[in-house]
Length: 213
Figure (cartoon, rainbow, N blue to C red):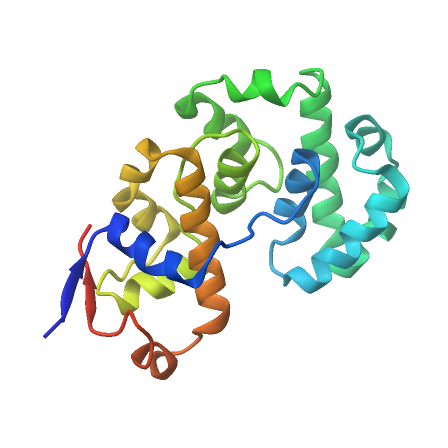
């Protein structure tokens, strides 16, 4: 029998006992956009190497990123893997931003139900990447139903087979304060990097709890 029921809010407060998540690690929102694409199908250690290359060559100036030849970009992001697809995705994204004068603040004024489909229409932007961009760049509080979240929620009695299935259960986060939505994502990911299997979870403070969505 579960020891306690958890709402998303109480789960957030339980995880917050770990301390601030420190997420997203970046000096600018343009760096976050790049990192959100580069982190696909790899780990942050590899991403950090690519980001260091781009920081040296462009300082994440969006005009420089938009103008970079694909062959040059590929060499810069090679440590992140899948560099052909990721280079195409980055160039398409920054071309899209250029057509909007690189004005992230103006883009953020677009309603969520319009902006998310626009991001998803860009090459190489999956649901997880789009939601990360919405949350950390365009200041829309949304839930990122990534692998760490789906694994944790399954252990808490809310298994879902797909990203969309968990996303559909967590729209209450859309009404949260932006900082709390960002922290929830960061805390879940930090937890997932430490608690990686059912045995470790069983010894954690969340063991025996049931998430109610």
